Amino acid sequence: MIDRKFNLCYDAGVEEKPFEIIGMDGTVLTKGRRSGGPNLLLAGAFGIPMPAEEQAMWKSLSDEQKAVAILRLRVLLDADGLKPPTPEQAAAYTGLSLNRWYEMFAAWREKRSLSRIGISADLPRSRKMEYHDVMQRLVVGVVDADPKGSVRRLALALGDAYTRETGISEDDRPSYITIRKFVEAELRRRAKAESPGHHVVFDCCACELPHANGAYVAFLVIDKGSRLVLGAALGDADESHAGYALAAKDALDRIRRDPLDRLGWAEDLTQSEIVIGRDTGSWAEHAADMIAAGMREHLQPSTKARRFGAYVRPLIGLRMGRVKFTPGTTFTAPSFAKPSADDVTRFAVEVDVHNADLVPGVDQAAGRQPPATLVALLKRLAKG
Image (cartoon, rainbow, N blue to C red):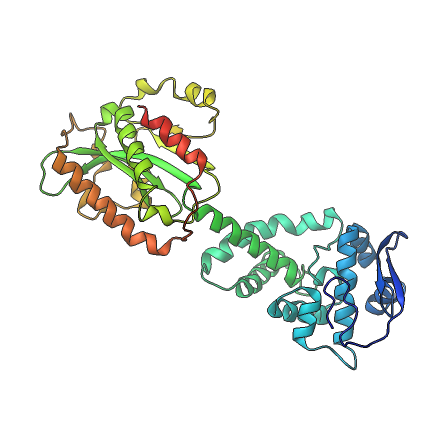
């Protein structure tokens, strides 16, 4: 019989005695029936007296964490006993997946420590901070080098990188479970950053259209994580308010229909920037307007001389199907062509093809709505 909460016994019919889980400070954590209390388990795990390092970790745990620690220690000690539970039983008792149980058991056998049982146990904050910043810095490069690697492989690579960086031996560095948490946090951060609608940029630059003469200006709303074009329009770099208004209206339409309507949208838009057209003077009140709208951090403007195509170039490239972007001519062109209805249609088709190529590689989550902040921002721009 399995009792997930208290980890009482492995076989039905085993008689047990009443017990209380009592913390080292005397606090009663919980009650139940078990053949041994926490102090006995701690002694069996770490000896008498309990090492000062382990005592510091134990005292740093909350009551809830202490209860979980006792549960896991009981299973780990039983797993080294004469009648060990099966891995499946042990995993069920500890509430872990089978793979995580194997990893925890291996880490425990390598070094008996509360830091090896996956309950955020660690040394006091001064020790933790010694490795925290280094791990945070190293994990970025480790994942960059192997973006498709498994969590386990990345954690092992991060541990090796930490050893090379610090010269600390494998025995003295943070546990595998602790290192793994840095990898998992980095992967979560990346997944969030790549979710559509998390970070959106607005760019404009000159372009050439197929079967048309003259320089046009493309206004684009680009999702930075997925590289999808959420909205697009043709306009004039000397009238960028109007150009972005058209692109924003297009985006409001596109995000509500196939294929963008089935994306796994981010919970919220956290960052956005905008490349201002040649009419910088008309944007003089932009910052104040954004503050008044409660969007101080959004649509951060770029007015540098070489700003045109600053996001198009790295996210899309200088070609989008048959559309050729020419950022360098945006500032120097004396005038821009007025797009016809056919030009607008051909341009929209190239956007459709671009997105169709990318959508299969983007998270899908039917029914999830685009971030409210993104919609509000697009509506604001759409007013011109």
